[in-house]
Image (cartoon, rainbow, N blue to C red):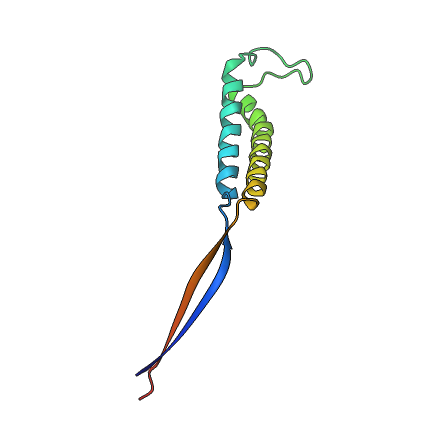
Length: 108
């Protein structure tokens, strides 16, 4: 069994970038939280709607508000993530790495 070792020294650029999925999940959660706060902060669900003539339950009001607040939260979180990503591009570092690859030949 013989081993063939290759050693490469390279210079790479490293930067810390935000995880967009985490920002989007937090934005959606904040949108739901804002919709919940708005639903229970204003108790106007017992009145008849002047536009439709219907009375909406708190669940329906929460659903309507969630349809608006979640996309707004997603958009704001995406903008924050993009701004942080743009800022992280200016803080790149050059690092020297040693890359080693070993290939084992198993023929006798």
